[in-house]
Length: 313
Image (tube, rainbow, N blue to C red):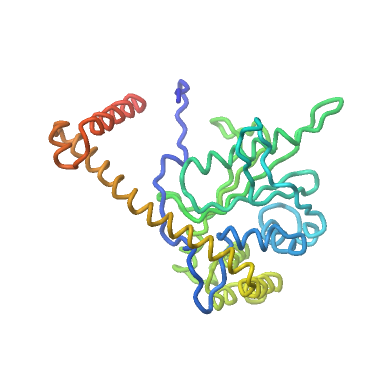
């Protein structure tokens, strides 16, 4: 990546990822429902025209349109990302709806990698490009992406952040592209620390969608008729055979990925030790002996460290 002169913005990639207070996708225990961070649950409750009221409820806290109007105006849209080439792999968004001429995309993110964030940006840009209205002049349709993140960033305390295309002074280039980041663990942290009374309606809605414990979810949204119905219906859905089979397959795959990730984590920890030893002036040969990494691997790590230093300077 090349740098732009006199332009050095801070990005999310500058912050370390935190997995504190994340929701685990695992086998359900008695008294639990599947969380909305489960792909199976999200599809079941949001990608269904008969359950429009639930996505409308969530969106009513983000978009300046009433819940009643959203229920009437939301139109579920095709969620396949257009392929540039026939050989490209088919990609699917989690949720796409058309609302009063604008397109809203919701993505549930359990993977905290920068690659996932870049992929989601690609989704929205593709959606923006494919919905250009041609006529006497081009009309570009507004696109909004809402990311429900089952992770957060250390050093960033907000539960929700809104990103647009702006210059250094904050002047907006266009209002037609907006990215919204919602950090579920941050909302859970606020709940743990201060209790339900300190949560606003939006935060209660998010927690009711995300919280696996049925009793706690009901306590969080007591008095909210729509979200009470959501909890009851999500409990019933979890008892259905087809849903149970799909969910069991999902958490089993997640469990396998976690085990593989632990092994990968050991390798990453070894690399970090090697970097630390190199920073302290240890020779490549001695670092290799202490970490069991090959000389070639150590040389590559050293080269990457030097390149990173050059980029910073």
